Image (tube, rainbow, N blue to C red; front, side, top):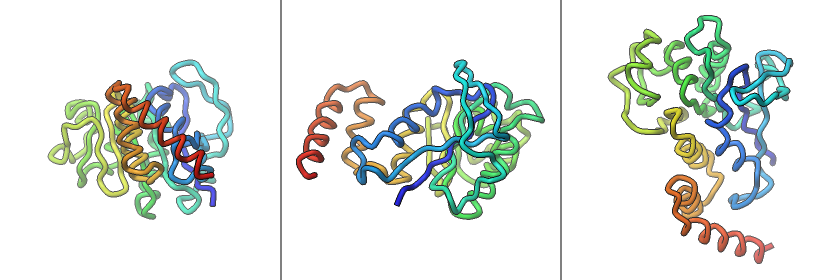
Amino acid sequence: MLKTVHMAVYDTFSDWEVGHATAHINRELWHREPGTWQVKTVGITADPVTSMGGMRVLPDLVIDDLKPADSAMLILPGLATEFDPESPIGAFARKAREFLAAGVPVAAICGATFGLAREGLLDDRPHTSNDPGYLAYSGYSGAEHYVAKTAITDGDLITATGTRPVDLAREIFARLGIFEPHVLESWYKLYGNNDPAGFYELYEYEQQQAAAR
């Protein structure tokens, strides 16, 4: 059964913050169950949006048509307009509330965590972001639950600092079970720690998968 991870897209979304996660979800190499996963993009409307890096993206569907029952996870990248009361992250934070209430995971990084904070979703649960002072501007009440880590998972919610997209990806892969634990360890060894041993371990696993087909 094909499983879909949905990623929010809006003008100025931080494409690099979600690149490791989406690329390795969509690419079946090293997956525990190859051919199981895909990524779809979600916009406020069906109109194209432009990322912070200048990439033009046409959403696969609109937010009003996104239902938790049809999704394995909602990923929220950062953006340049999180402080704007009319920022699109507000609508996606409300959708995140719907997802969490339904028991479907949500992953947010950088400016998206600000949107979750403003929505009140970080008031009562462990979370992280770019900095406690940064989240304080949202007016939220969850400062005592802030955890000084690059990325953390609390049940169905993953939060991360914008400077560590690789750590966000690791938490996403672990929560979804996309890789075997030892494969995820090798993946992070390579992409997170720049350790070439991870490449050779992944290559060996790739050969084992090929031989088993």
